[in-house]
Length: 200
Image 1 (cartoon, rainbow, N blue to C red):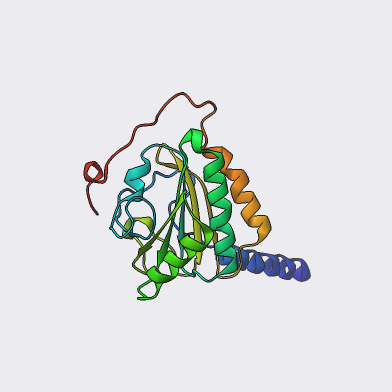
Image 2 (tube, rainbow, N blue to C red):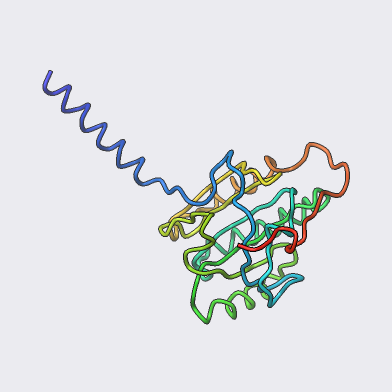
């Protein structure tokens, strides 16, 4: 009996560690995206300006990523994969943006170089403060927070520690893009300007 109780206790302890190891970062599946914020856009139509990418994409399908390490190979692979996925789903007016959370003076220059070398036309890179927009609750331990949403409601949330995202994870994220696409494209979606959204 004592041995059984000990075994149960050990299993429970390891189970608690497993749960504790999971990162909860950013708005979760089923939640509404918190709203406007204005990061510095590095490329795209608002390059060099603090513009609201949430506002730009309105109710359409969006891949939103919060990242911390521009030089991470996994992060770069994810951006390239989202660039292709966004282009492939242009008829659904899918939007994608990656916001790097950093206060380094070198980040903007590094991202400009990345955007040029990767020839990004569909994914906008941006910079915000290390904590990220307050209402989004981006976890400090999350090097990547991937949020897929449509109608401003989150469908998929996946978070990764530094260096932990794999090619398999990236393939899964691209596959998950289907969860935010409309069953049939019927016409232009509603758009909202940054002014209409307000500031936060």
